[in-house]
Length: 190
Image 1 (cartoon, one colour):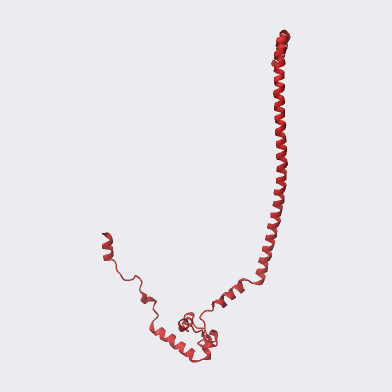
Image 2 (tube, one colour; image 1 turned 60 degrees about the horizontal axis):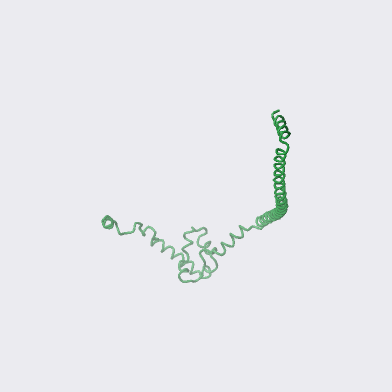
């Protein structure tokens, strides 16, 4: 319901007037008369844009230069280009790739690359050394495990032997065994 009301109250005209962007007819007539005077010179129009611009009045505004050859876009004839993009790109690249700056950047990049390569080699050597050291430690650890298992097994056997000897002495020599135990407890108490 609200959409119906909004559509009835809204204006269907564009919000921006296109008349603001139209070139007035008196300026078009001025541009056409300048074009005809430049084209009537024959060789003057085809000799180059800078000669035509200087002959047309020295330092003309940029906007008047843009309208000098309006028909070249539509007809496809190349009398004098408005803006030579390839020349502009070439000149900007030439300025940006100044030989001194380029050689300095190239030497800096070479030095940086050499530093990175040397550090990479050092790192690879260190990794190799650490891996060999790790292998040695792993073998030493495995040998230590085997030794610890042997010692644990031997201690278990010795403990069983001592317990069996205690029981044998306690049965065979009870008086001496208890006297020896009392002495041992007295030593611990001191």
